[in-house]
Image (tube, rainbow, N blue to C red; front, side):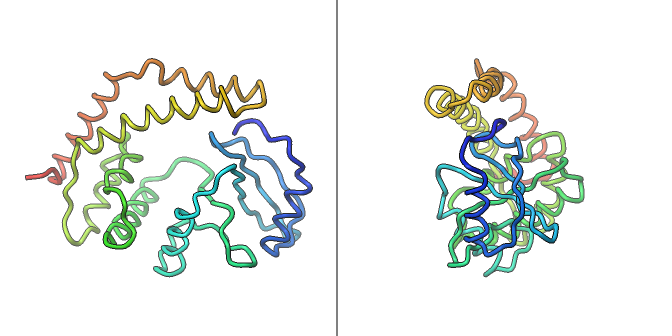
Length: 226
């Protein structure tokens, strides 16, 4: 969210201190994200933590990322800190500048590692994760992904296309839901209304151009179905 919630931050800070047994001293709103409230909590010794407050917590997702980080020892996974009683109540994300090529390569390696464990943790196709990187530097990600995938790679442009269209429809749904039913702040409504205009009407030509570019990159790396 771009506008802070009205709930008591003193109470929130105390809750975090108790739940995580951390010597937190202050909490500051971070105007990032679209469907949750982000905060930077600072400890008495200067350590900083990112807390994401949301009305719904996808417990199964938090459990999966915790397993990847702590059981599979995949350090690139940003997992939620466990509370004192061993529960996951907050998710974490990377906040900062855009990825460098080296960081994109590391991300591709991480995805390739995760996708090796298809019998246990993959519930959707690899295209679902990779579609987030199908911009101008998609080749950087795909190069690292293909290099590290030991059992070969086959990717389907139609599945990429499905998730591109799904993303647009989800954005329309999410922004509309927030404007009509969730937001209690006029300024937040203005932010969301402005953001919604990027998807109304859906730019099918732009999406199809993007899908064609993806197909060209997949063909370049020889990962299309034979």
